[in-house]
Image 1 (tube, rainbow, N blue to C red):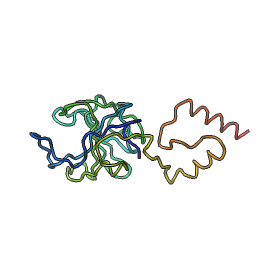
Image 2: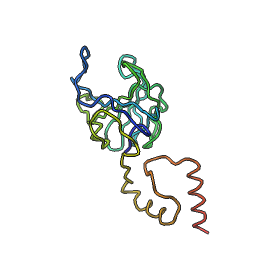
Image 3: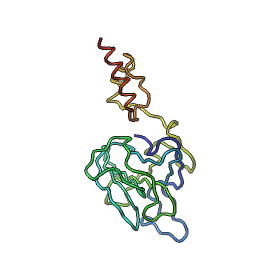
Image 4: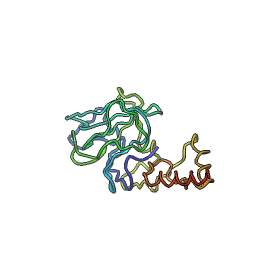
Length: 193
């Protein structure tokens, strides 16, 4: 699991807070967490799964994407400027889903990230801060400070590639650039000589 932006993120509205004066929330509380990408506006999948919705809702979420994650939760990414994935697509953790925006019922650019146990039940939400392993407070969170643990199923392979100098094993939840792949392939070829 990872944060939805690279670099610094500003948390602007917490899960569970009451609505501002004059507004109404269906559940009586803010059902997700609002955040703004400081260093990047590209929104990434926090976990792998399948896109169940990639749509536009003019009166609410604007451009939004729903992913049924492998862990069974539904991650909802709202108010995107643009959507880069289609319904039915298999999504990798960290894959770019879209760009932070201000579509739908908003007062400014941000990402509303909501997690539900049951997509059709608005009362089945989960606190995104707890899920992401970050403090439930307003302010700045940085991807570099967010601990990236290698998955249990990949730990042995990670140790092997480090031991054989094919990769340094850093950033286990990030995509590799083509340059990094080239270097790893070259290192593997040298190992096999």
